[in-house]
Each structure stands twice: as C-alpha cells, then as structure tokens.
Amino acid sequence: MLRRFGRFWRRTQAAWTIEVRRRAYMSDFPMEWLDPVLDRCRSEVLEHRPRSSTKTLDDGRIEPVTDLDLRIEGHLIAAALEAYPSADVLSEETHCNPAALASELCFVIDPIDGTKELIAGTADCAISVALFQRGRPVAGVLDLPFRSQRFACSTDCGVRVNGRPVQLEEPPQLRAAKLAVSPTQRADPAFASVWTRLLPGHIAPVGAFTPKVAQILCGECHAAFYPPKPGKSIFLWDYAAAALLLAEAGGTLMSLDGMSLLNALPMEHSGGWVAGPADLCGEIRSAILETESA
Image 1 (tube, helix red, strand yellow):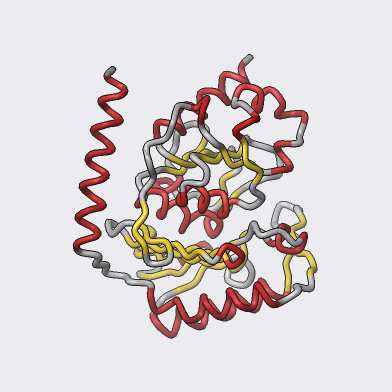
Image 2: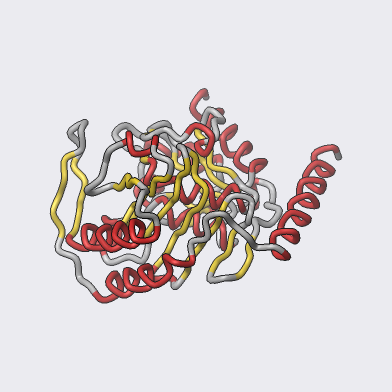
C-alpha cells in the first residue's frame, strides 16, 4: 500500500513538473543551433557505407573506428566551437583529454555510439552530444538516424523528442516489464541464470548503449541493463547526454551498487549499469545481485 502511494505521489509530482516545463520551455543552454549539423550528420550516416579500421585503447582493447566516425566528429566539433568559441571539447576519437571537463564550458561528444552495429548493418546506433558547465552536464542531445528520432534536454527543462515533450510512464512490476539488453549478453551462457530470473520472454535485444536509453524514453522498453563483464565499459562520452535525458524524463542511470552515474560522472565505468525508472531499476539490481550470490 505504501509503495503504491509512493509511486502515485512521485508520478503526481513528475506530472506537475512536466506541465510547468511545457508552459515555460526555457534554458540557459538551448541546443536548437545544433539541428542543422545533426541533420547533415544523419544524412551522412544513412547514405554512407563506412570503411572501418581499429584503434587500440590504453588498456590494450581493440575498438572499431570508421571514416564516418571521424567525419561526423569533425562536423560536431566545428559547429560546437562556432556556437561557443571559448568552449573546450572532450570526444571519443580525436579530443580524448579529461582535463577539458575543468573548462567553463565543455562539449562531450560521441560521433557514433554503436559503430560495430553500424558496420554490421543494424539500426542500433546514435549520435551523442552533451554540454558541460564547470564539470556538470547542462544540456544533451541524442540523434538516432535510422529511427528519425532526436532527443534533446536542458537542466530543469524536460525532454523533447522531435520537439514533443516526453516523460517516463509509471512502469509495471519487474515480471511484466520489457527490458532492453545487448544481444551478445543475451546469448552468453554465463548470464543464463540472470535471464531466467528476469523473464526472457520480456527481453528486447538492442545493441549499443544509447539506443537502449532511447527505447526507454520512447516507452518501447521499460528499462535496460548491462551485467558486468570483463573488458566491457561505458565511457563518459557514451553516457553523458543519455544520463541527463533520463534524469530530466524522470528516470535514472545507475551502477549495480546503486551509484547514480549522473552524480558521479566517472570517465570510465566498468561495473555494469541499469537505466529506467528508479523503482524498477532497484528491482533489477536486486534480481542481479541475488543471482550473483546464489
């Protein structure tokens, strides 16, 4: 009873907040100036067949990179610095310097989240841009070229997809929830007990991180998660915009020990994560931890 009342109260508060935002959609950092370059980037993703190569991370891991990643990153950086000439840039491919976050303004850019998926010919990829002020995210944009979706938010101004306000709906109980997970983990025998506990009939395979979050924001999935796996991480440019979008829509992105990644903002997080409404994320975390301790 208390839990139902708590959910009702949070939903009422969230509905009131989103109505205030609808009536006065104002931001210190509007991101509409980014639309023309995102339109160009979207067209290039849809029309281009990328030539792939690889890069070696500091820990020796190999990641794919394409000529398209580099070109889109160049478009985004040029547009960002034209709009904010004094800003700094932290980006996945060419400006990977964490010290940039100490600047008054810093753009955190992932030109293509889902490069492997793009090379494989699937639609699970996205362009991600976040704007930081003195080390904290204040605006974020995600563009999903193959789904014709663009999500934008600024702090305390809510989330819009293609210009329309959106907010997370009250989720069902875990047993009825639809969860977005990576296909590779879904097929991994090491996680068989996790899927059994989380009901595989309600699992949607979605490749990259950002498209999982997009499906939550659109209501196509209720939550997403990624159990910890050696050698697998998400980096700040992967999740910065997505974490702010989730928070502005009434959700959260957290580690499996309950830490909010939006509050902690680690440059690299390798311990697994869960995204969606806070109550449902708590249920998922509990199910995973119970499975690991069994």
